[in-house]
Picture (cartoon, rainbow, N blue to C red):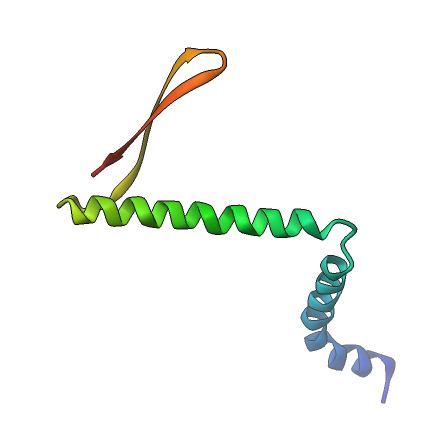
Length: 85
């Protein structure tokens, strides 16, 4: 078999090799705490939005919208108001 044919047969394996390289990179991460912290923050954020949506629906609204009104009172604090739509 020629070298060109061998190269053609190996093309479908390229995505799998890239995935393996990516997995190995993150499995051997120097600081796995950051990976866990980011994953936990994402899960908590999605859970908070789901909670707000459930609260709005239970009160007769169609759901929770991403309507956030931020009013700065001073440089160190802010009032954030969430609204149901």
